[in-house]
Length: 284
Ligand code: NAP
Image 1 (spheres, rainbow, N blue to C red):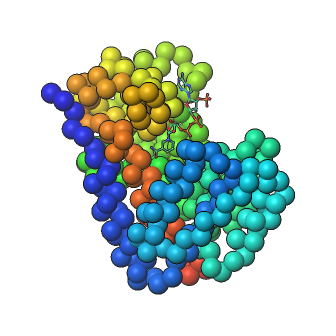
Image 2: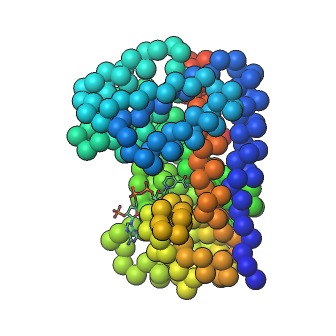
């Protein structure tokens, strides 16, 4: 029997509607994005984020800077946005051009405006089990698993990928939900031996078909985070054959992608609340 589809588009629409209602309640909420350079994929992501934010009632500020922008000038721009009362939430689109130190930029963000949850303070609070702003993709993955009533407590969860923006925060949220979590990466030996044990399998690598049907435990919940542009269009990291083995699976497109944008808006709202409360509020 084919796996049940975990429909990110449907859940994202619900999240966005809830966010829009709360934005109306707060009045003016400003989300600023900064795009450095002209990476075509980043341009698409920024456009989608602005469209979604505007539809939810945010006031959006779209800063575009040339790829030649210096490290110092980007840090100055971040500093200016940190001090600008019209900016509740700030996003610097990654990847940045090679000459810019992404870690330094993340450190320069006001943690209370850090909508991507990349500042070390936000990443550290998550690691300590006191989430503040958590990277939106990880939040979206957990929301999808909860929506489809996937049992997490005591479940064996395997996350493939350990990036700061997806793999690590997802593993930490699964741990906080009392799953027994294994993180796999490029140096993991015998990846399939790990994935075959997983009741919950999250794949965030960026390589088509890195997970094939024979690597999936029958009945598992599989979350495919990968977004790979190929000649046959956008594909994930999980081979389509896995649909016949998994119990639940996210499609690509229409799974994690829409949830990332919806949860980014949720994060922007959270940042706006931080500012109004004058303090961090732990995420529920
Ligand atoms: P990333 O920073 O490149 O991280 C990829 C991870 O995969 C790394 O931890 C890497 O291990 C691991 N990896 C590479 N080859 C592997 C292998 N052969 N076996 C096991 N692990 C391997 O990428 P990312 O930013 O996390 O994104 C991952 C994918 O998700 C990409 O396709 C991206 O486009 C997509 N994505 C989708 C959304 C969405 O909304 N749907 C959001 C964000 C990202 P090492 O650490 O050892 O190098």
